[in-house]
Image 1 (cartoon, rainbow, N blue to C red):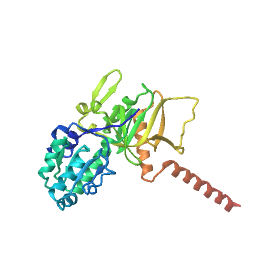
Image 2: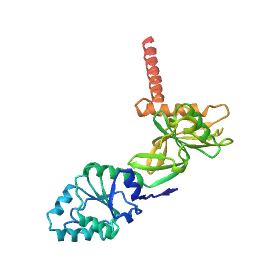
Image 3: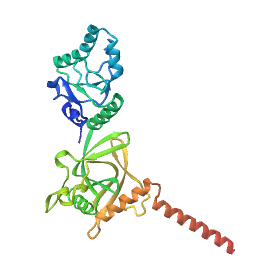
Image 4: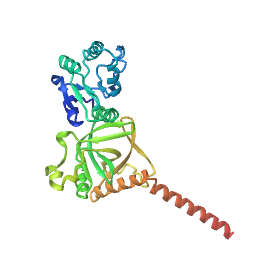
Amino acid sequence: MSFIKSVRLKKIAKDLNLKIVAGFEGESRQVHVEMLSRPGVEFAGFLDFFDPQRILLIGSKEAHFLMLLDENTQKKRVEAVLKLLPPAVIFSVNVEIPQYFIDLGNKYGVPLYHSDERTTPINSKLYAYLRSALAPRETLHGTLLDIYGMGTLIIGKSGVGKSETALELIKRNHILVADDRVDVYEAAPGIIIGQAPKILERYIEIRGIGIVDVVQMLGAGAFRENKKIRLVIELEPWDKNRTYDRLGIETENYVIFGTNIPKITIPVLPGRNNATLVESAAMNQKLKYLGYNAAETLIQNVAKKAANKGMDEDDDE
């Protein structure tokens, strides 16, 4: 299941330490787009391509351009923009907000915020924040852990032992990100981030025991809010009719938002320690990312041994 998020202006202001100075009644508005607008040509009177869904960011350049106009023209140009009801206007730290701007913000209910940062830093921070908050989400059934720094998503049918395996891994000082429901989004092309819904953060469900709060049980270090997914492990009941990869040469992929993520299938059998297997798979995959592939190294060594043996046999002749 996938869904698109929105974020309330009041939350943006709180998270980015923005101070509201006008348009208080509009703080409950939702922002739906990540792109920002620097209203230069708009203040010059050109509104043909103005997008009223974007937050406006006004820095020293835009402010100084307005000051070149007479006050009456300033008011007309600003009112022409604000009457289109953009979500909000944010001023950088070095910009003094004119009184007419405050009056128009109150008139149209458009929140005006003052930042304590300069234009470029607040622009970068705000864009990154909105991209993360508004990225399309997809919900996956599984458990996400940070194992040796590897975001490892464990999937499988209900009852196969995902949460039990996760709890054992957490007891080994690995870190829980999400259990049962994992919300994923693409932070940047090829970078898939997973996190738990707010209401499920810190909790893990164990059949026969119930809900466990890993932070209360094992400490604050047992949980983190999000993690880039770099490996998917599927736990499945052993199928005697299936041939499982024994060397690790074959590469499976799990696709999320068009990004291929390495996938390993681990058959579950009584007596097998699933936590140890998942832990080993994560470390082995990390070594692959670092440039070492044990299976390929073994095959190369065997090939060299066979070649050297053939040369020795030729020498005997």
